[in-house]
Image (cartoon, rainbow, N blue to C red; front, side, top):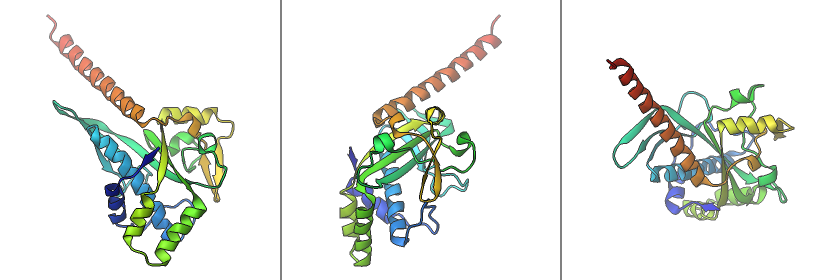
Length: 240
């Protein structure tokens, strides 16, 4: 289980609310802000962990390519040097409240992947998907948010409320998401007049530090391959 610290919450609250928010279901203005803030909090939380291990990241919020990616990893700082990737690692972060009492998000939940085309592979632009489930039921939480805005309470009340959020997170690689969907009997699911691809949480990994190791293993493999190719090139062109 995870929580946000005060600095992370304050940063999210201070981030300007965009003119356009791509909500997948209708929400009034106050609930749109809440949805946006929770999404930003998820991004900040992941970014801070990655940064603490030397990964170089940037937010994709203002990107013009019209995708849903939230965070890009484009390098790694290690003690002796800085490694910059030729291709950025793309991470999509989604957040959800528990929709109703009795909903078991581990056995019933999914990584949220909005169905835009008829091909699952075309609808995931990311290398890794991360789903955060907050330990709050949607309707009671939204009532608390509405009450703060409608009674004109100050930002301290919002900070206090978001500091109560506890959550679990789950991650999956692109290739494993494709496999998980292919093995699912139902390829899609529906909510609020929207269609999503099936990508069961139960097929995801809840250990975020294994995600860090997975990333590092991939970087090591890539670097070793590139060094080996360079070595072989030098040997093949300098053999007497």
